[in-house]
Length: 198
Image 1: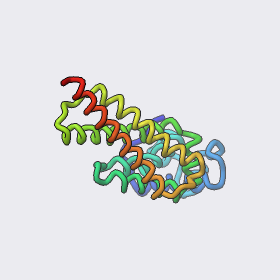
Image 2: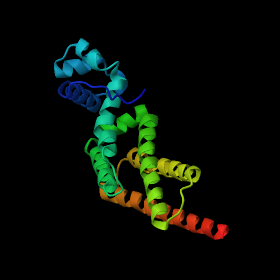
Image 3: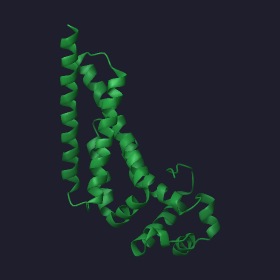
Image 4: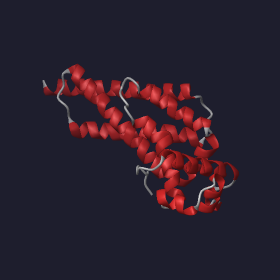
């Protein structure tokens, strides 16, 4: 199972997506059929299969369009906290749907959030190196970025699995604290390495 990026009519795909969401508010995903989805929005089954292979692919498309694409599109060190706030808010606004979705495609969602977090932290490390005038150590940076990526993914998904009780503001602050701590550790590591080389 993988997130779908293929082109399709936004209107049609959104209608199918909304139909699946409505169905998932009433019944469990495993009991929902393609016919249930198409009946909900007045489409023929052929219309569904023109755009998606099955209901799992539609679910992936929803998560990608609602969460992953807004998070990754144009993300920078300056706007990443705003984008994380939007991610937490989107999940809270459709809490029941995302809690159900995590039970179905936890690994896929975790993989995407980890990947985004790793890319962001790689940029953070590059910024630190530039500020300190230090030559980049790609292998060490990759290990640090992977650790950070899995950590952020764990924070986001752990929050969702535990009922999304904390506010988006609280969660963004939590992530910001992790990033600040990681920055401090990275600076200390570089300064320590510099002393060893002298």
